[in-house]
Length: 401
Image (cartoon, rainbow, N blue to C red):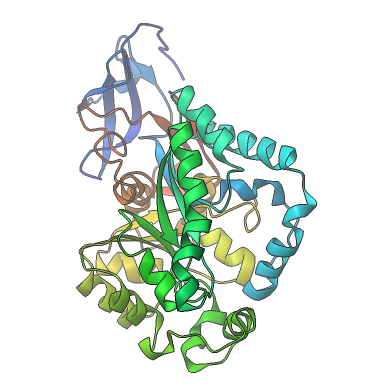
């Protein structure tokens, strides 16, 4: 880095910059006002000699959005074996969660929130089953750092007459605690498989939903009344699931939620093309979030990135949790996707990591791109092979401000 200055306003330059239209701009310069508001983007042939400009060797991108995270599970880092499959993974999370004190759980969430910020994550779509992560989020809010949208997750198989009371017992305490801390929060269903029919529909009017969708091979045979997930849900309920008549996971979504629902679908690993098309043809606002390293951690599986790219679908990226990942780093997710999907352009992957997630969480009026008037932060992506615009094994991200 050279020509670093300390004036109130800032100009940053790099060999490439992710422009507001989603393209990689050669020799890009972005200007910021003193409060971090973007004033403009330009191109200059000799960026390394511009006066009053910070030059960085890499790609300048706006702050990223981790569109799917379980910050509250950060204490599980390294504790759950890899490639054990979803049923054993769920059993471990449920049975071992209380082995850690609340103090430890809260402290780990605070640590990981700060780590995400330093690596350039500007916003997070975070799942909560309790208030463990709320101190970290409230601290970030007070300090003007990471913006969170919390999803108050609920799941279960209550009888119809008990569903409404069950829903409120799960969701209301989280909504109240979030309101006390000034946090943004909406209720969300956990998945298309661990929810009774009435309980799933009770969440249909939520302003924004984030639903685990076709994450694991164990879900594929669910509607055929077989497989590990089916057996787990049936045993939990003590009866046959009451939603099998939908015939499939995608069919359940379109049969239970309104067309105008603001929907985020997480993982999508086992989603077939006909599932994708059914969903895209029905919902007006749907984003598919990919968490590739989590999929590999649990099932040694891969998300359908190429299929979604070819369909022109809205895509965002997430890390999932440290119960199913080795870090909450979007740089590592980018490297993984780039290595396993070489035909997807790097600029597309960077769009997924920035504006894609911001749009999904409806933060895109403030962050996600270097558009004038926004305050998206600035991040340097280094470890780039400029001749091929690919990521090296040592690629990393660093927050500039």
